[in-house]
Length: 67
Image (spheres, rainbow, N blue to C red):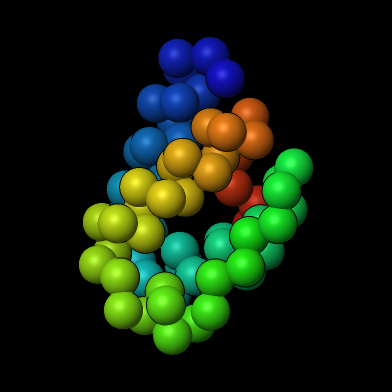
């Protein structure tokens, strides 16, 4: 990802609430499986969910899919 795409990603993810983040995790299709339970996602702070989603997107070189 280029710097501009990473900035766009961070801006996009920074305004997502818990439900939007969870939807992105459940819709995520990357080069490796992501299998988070709803209970696990409910227990994490929203900032941690944002961090994980940004890392997944950077690792897979793509912006998050619509939920």
